[in-house]
Length: 435
Image (cartoon, rainbow, N blue to C red; front, side):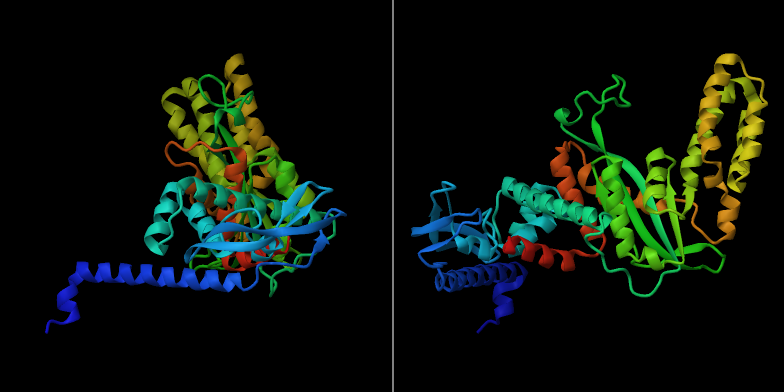
């Protein structure tokens, strides 16, 4: 008699595994359907409709839902409110399926695959890894709907924190240094989302909407060479496609959750945009403010290009000296050296505009002093976040988003990247079911 291994072989084993999994899912789905049939949701002849009226029991109606065990059929009590001219089944809300046809467990799976890969890719992952067949459109709709609910809940919570109606629990032990690194990156959107907006394209039209991203992390010590080291696993993220005034409460609420009130030192790192420092002044007063050195160097290279025609062969050496001054944080020397070039009137006007960046933020560019304090002077953490959290999902080839859809998926990705998925999803599912 041949052994099972000899009969099946590698390919045969895969077929056996798939057949057994399919049978187990079918068995589990049947069991789930029978369990759900034990309580069809009859809650008496009348019940409160939730809007000040009474809804009357009128009979039973069927509904199909998809679950992690496959499709099942429900038979649930149906109530109708004459005052609202609307009907509902209490069991739908109790099971968490009131506004859709996916079970909470399957919705969580769909939200995760939708946050991590394209909706088409997520559909294939569900089919291959879980044996669940959904259309790409259902994956998209479900993931975006739950991401939108999560976004609204996060923003409502941040507003409540700002207004003093909610006090988030801070971190455990006081942290040495809490960083709030802020940056923005464009997300490609459908044309109607950028109508009338100015952009950097050749035709002057915008084709993206800015996603503002905040990366909060902690630093406890330095490495053997005296350089700051980010605490492993300490990064958390908040984001919005809305205006800066909507971003501020999100950053503030997350900073409170991360223990900003007990942090021995708070640092805001940014690229130099005005709204970043306005946000810091309003929500994080007293924080050390640092312009990201990489952004500052980019501006200095742009300045070097402006003056290069006048300097000729001396241009590279002149720029190297200015970069060294910037690296030391000697902004006064940089300004004086540039203004003493004797440029023509037209170039001088453009150069003076460029120098405004360094003039305004000179105290945020004291890099030698910041290094002496053992602080980061580059916003690499948030720039990496812009790539990993935003670009790797929202900026793939051919993608064009609505603002609502992009914001929804971005909310899911922030929670996932912050390592809070396992905590947030059960909480969120409970809120949805209760509602």
